Length: 391
Image (cartoon, rainbow, N blue to C red; front, side):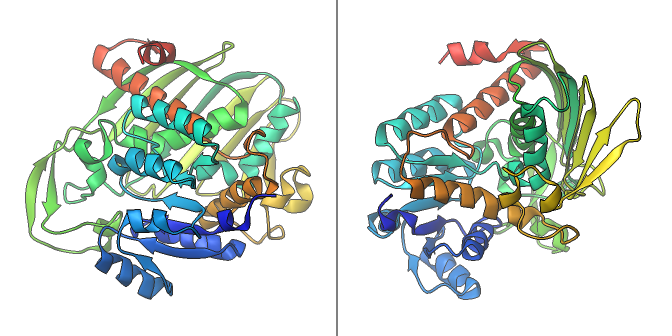
C-alpha cells in the first residue's frame, strides 16, 4: 500500500474549475488540505466561500508541505508545464487540467519526467467518466457493436458568441495558438478514441475566426462570467484564435471520421456529441442528455439505454453511484475520475496500467492539435506522425 500522506490533495487555482475539483474530492471523502491562488488575497477569498481552513501564499509553499501528496492543477494553460515539472520533482502525484502543456515539446518532457519520478500523472479528460461512455467503451471492447466504419460528432458552445465575450482563453499568448480545438475539441478527440479504441493517424482541418476583434473588459475576467450580463468599460483586442473548426479524420485501421467545434453556436451551452457507425449497430451520445445512450439497428427497433447501474456492464457499475432515474452529470465525472486516480495510488503498484487519462494521453492530444493547426495553415492532410517525428 502507498504511504497515507500521498492521499492528501491540494488544489492550485481558484477560477471556474478549481472549486469543481474541491467539491469532487469532498464528495469522495478524500482529505483536501487547501489551495493556492494567483495571489494570497484570492486564495483567502476563495477559501472563505469554499469553507477551507488552509491556504498557501505561493505554489512553492504548497509543494514544501510534506502532507500534500496529490497536486490538482487548474491554472491557465501557460503555467501547466512548469507547475507539473515542479510538482513531479517535489515528489507529488499530479492531476492537471488540459492541455498538459503549450506544445508537444513540453508535453513530451513531462511524459518522460513522470516516468522518471515514478509518480501518478493524469490529465483531466473527465468526459470519459460519464457512465454511458464507459459502457460504450465496454461494448466495443467485447465486440457487441462490430467493427467501426465511421465516427461523426461535435462539441458546440455559445459562451463566446458576442464580441463582448472575453476570457484569457481567446488570447494565443495565454492559451495557445488553438482555442476551440484545444479547449473543447481535445475532449471530443480523447473521448472518441477512448470509447472506440481507435487512434487518429491523419487530419484535414479548416478553422475560422468570425470575431477578429473582441472587447476586453478593463479588469480581470472569470470563465463564463460574460454571460452574467455584467457591463464594464472595454478596450478592443485583436483575436487570431479560432471560433469554429471542422476536421476530417482518418483512424489507424481504415475507419474515418469528422467533427466540428464551435464556441459561437447560440443555444448550445455545452454539447458534446458522437455517433459511431459500426457493422452490427450504431451508437450515439449527447452530453446535454448524458443519461441516455442511443443504439441504432437495421432489422429491429432502435433502443435508448438509460443510465441505471442494474443495466450497465459489471465493470462500469462502480462509476454510477445513483439508481436509474436519478441523473448524474458534469460534477460526477470529476468525482469518478478522481476515484480512479486515488484508488490507483492506494493500490501502490505505479507500474500497473493506468485507469485514468495519463500524461501520455495529454501529449497525444497536443500532437493532434499541432497536426490540425498545420493542416489548416498548409491546406492539406497531415499525418500525426509528421509532428511526432519532428520532435
